[in-house]
Amino acid sequence: MTLDFLLIALIVVATPGTGMIYTVAAGLTRGGRASIVAAFGCTLGIVPHMIAAITGLAALLHTSALLFDAVKYAGVAYLLWMAWMTWQDRGSLSLTGQGPHKSTALQVTVEAIVINLLNPKLSIFFFAFLPQFVATDAPDALPRMLEMSGVFMAMTFVVFALYGLFAASVRDHVLSRPKVMLWLRRTFAAAFVALGAKLALTER
Image (cartoon, rainbow, N blue to C red):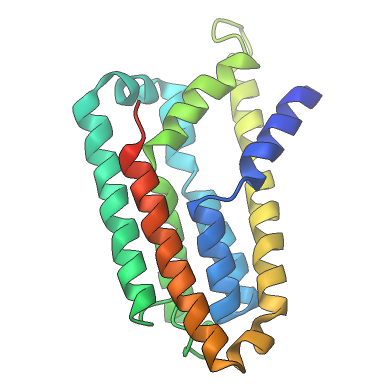
């Protein structure tokens, strides 16, 4: 595994995106445990994209405009729904919620998985990214791709968890200020709308 791969993977993981924003929101609204659950869910959401890239399904997604758009707009609709629920202060990211109950933890996990699952760019990223470091016709191509994918997922979990735990560390200061809570709720809702718009405008 090369240093180039590790650096590029870290840059990709650390760049703010849908999963990271969701994890930070979970940390602020539900605390440190919820942020870890969200980071874990976002990491699990990578698995289908990794499998798609390794098995060649990402190539189909890349060449089929209809399939790509179907996944893309499902993701857009989901992000807009998340924005609406956040704006209304309902759902797993409610700022008025008290701690991560079991049912909430499951909801956070599912929402985090779906957020990454409905992002077709992740499959295409893996499809374009892994072959740069592993020759597809190499005899050990599959084990090396699995190894690199595993490293990418581990980095995703660690970085997202750190962001979420940092957000959780300032949670008490946020929840004690109603105006800050209102501003945060609207900011997260606007962020989900912006990410949905960005996804809607992406091309294959």
